Length: 92
Image (tube, rainbow, N blue to C red; front, top):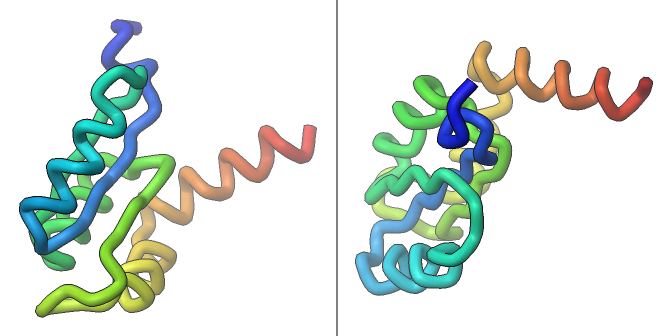
């Protein structure tokens, strides 16, 4: 498996370009694979496609709140499957 696939995926969802850039800079030296979304809708697409381990989200976006995004993330099959796998590893 390649090093890029081994990196922890982090989704950043924020409608503000300034805040997205701040988070990108904060993670620039870290060994994470950043996924950047400009809206809640874009974040949902990235969640479904990539199943990131961590989500950093704006509290208020025009199309979804951070709370709504978290609820939708919990309902996605890819998120549930990966969350269950992580819980199983922690239980062993």
